[in-house]
Length: 128
Image 1 (cartoon, one colour):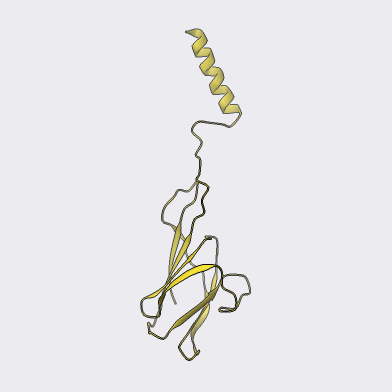
Image 2 (cartoon, helix red, strand yellow):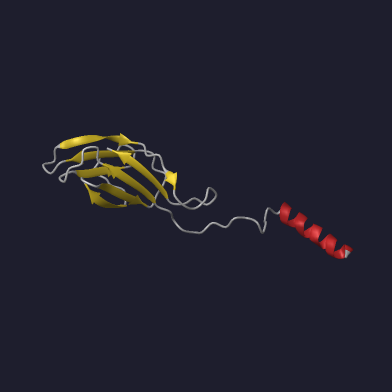
C-alpha cells in the first residue's frame, strides 16, 4: 500500500513540475467569427453601406473579407473571421451616391459562446 501511495505522490509531483496536467483545457483549433449588426438611424430602401477596418482606410475602397447581408430598411449584418477590430470607418449613401452619414464607430464586442480561456464567436450592435 505504501508503494502505491509513493507512486501516486511521485506522479502528482511530476505532473505539477512539468506543468502538464490532466486538467489542462484543450481549446479547439478552429477560427471564430465576429458579427457586427448595423441598424440604420433613418431606415430607407435606397441606402447603401460602405465600410472598412484598416487604419487610414477609405470606406468602399478597401473592404475586409466579410459576408454582408441586409438592406437599408432592416439593417445589415456583417460577419468577419476576426474579432479584434477596434474601429470601423463607415459611409452610408443613397441610390444617387449622396453621403447620408459617415464616420467611425468602435463596437463593443460581446462573446456569444465559447469561453474566456479559448475564445469564441463575438457580436456587436451599432446604430449609424
